[in-house]
Image (cartoon, rainbow over all chains, first blue to last red; front, side, top):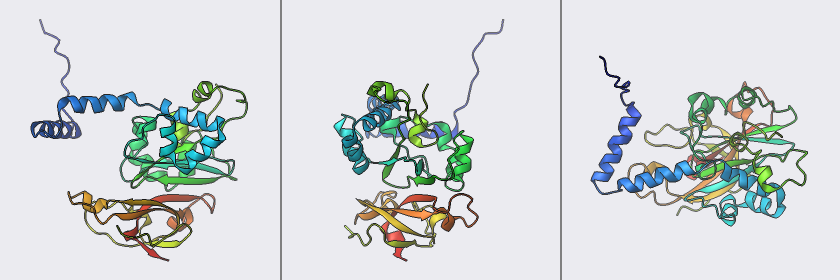
Length: 198
Length: 95
């Protein structure tokens, strides 16, 4: 009788490089396995709900909104959100301006607020096209930016990380911060979508 | 630390160069003209840091705003659509 052994998948080149590098670093005493696991866990624990909380707060508190646009990192610290080793620039959508973020060089992303980036954000297709024909790319996401609205693309090529502050949709007056945060999706904070009422 | 030579609103041109190594100035803006959006502070030079050197003197970093139509002559969209890119001072010259 044939035993079921499962299917064997060889490591990809990047997986192999990751394992090799990690084992070397551990062997040389630069980091421990435990530290690597803790860092991975920490990263997995971060998700877009952190960014959504920041957006909801800004919608309800104009003083916070101004401080957030002035210095994103400091404003997040006010909420007890650590944004380690990074300068956060928050860009605001208005009736006249729509913002969208990208990293054309690699995949820089505001991980501390949005968690791990989606695969499409790292794809060559998105990275090369969104700085060239942003309106067509946004239309591909189902977002038609009106002709009267300027599109600003932010390419995170160096030290800054970006987050879009979307416009608060009409019909949400009197909503609690929790309820507001629930309609702020990851894609709204990248700028490829806008918040919609459920 | 290298002192900041530009401030918001200044017109700048990105050097048209192709040095080898770890360069964080995208090709699509090299040789193009834009305006300083803001000075972001000073940071270690990534072209040095990538090779285990100190990255000093720190280099001023700017966000430079380019009109899409200045980057892509056939750009279809509004004439005031822009791309904003972070560029280190040693890649910029007065325009």
